Image (cartoon, rainbow, N blue to C red):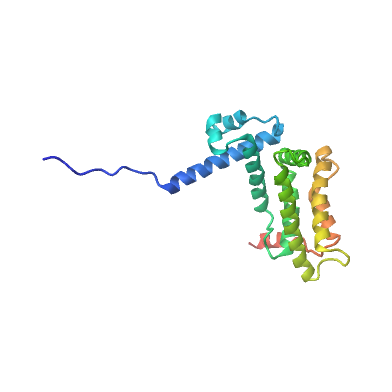
Length: 218
């Protein structure tokens, strides 16, 4: 008697494939961030990124079609990491300010990434630079989010007289970027966390200890 029962082929679930692809992309982005931070975007090669992940250059290009696309994804990846620390979309303006100060403290632990950001942001002022539009959009979004946070604080009566939400947002971004450059030049004379906190305190009424108290009681 002929056995006509057919065994259905085993198919790997779409979720499993998606998760595997997502993990591989994240590994590539982490490696690229390290490579670009260590040697700069122009010096960092796709081959070196691929080697750190343990794949071929062709395998890397399967996920990111060019070095420019990889750079764009790396910058977005860096911002995603920052957003984990800064609740930009929160309606608690004080929490956003505390997050910015926490980010400044965190940046002191990743000098290579800070250097990459400072170098690229300066280079990207040229419209021909591959990261030009990214930085234009990033500054616009960051400025709008900080302005929104300061508006919540203004509504609570915590923004000092004479300061507008827009001016405050522009000043905070300028302070953060300027502190990073000074810190890269001489880390012994600038504490980015302390200086940013004191600067914001000059025009915003914030109890900086609340975050520490909340963590202690958690």
